[in-house]
Image (cartoon, rainbow, N blue to C red):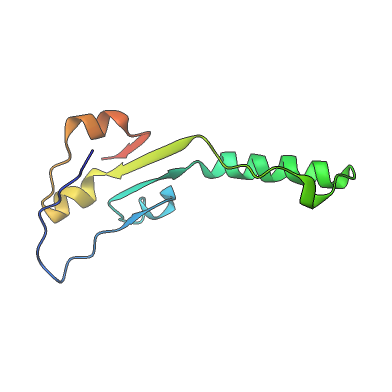
Length: 95
């Protein structure tokens, strides 16, 4: 899915990042791996290392759960309309 913002002004800053923390501060959108899942995986790795497994022998893992956050207030401020399918896929929508 392509999101065309239609913004040509050079003085507009649109924030798209991979964690939801900047969305509450006024960012437009975030999409990326769930940070809680990444912390959980880090804890599992730590436990395995503390039990004596060698770090070099542990498999590489990454979060398979992704999250999307949208800030409709920021979108309204930028004059951007967010398509309904995108709203439906969002895990959290800030009004």
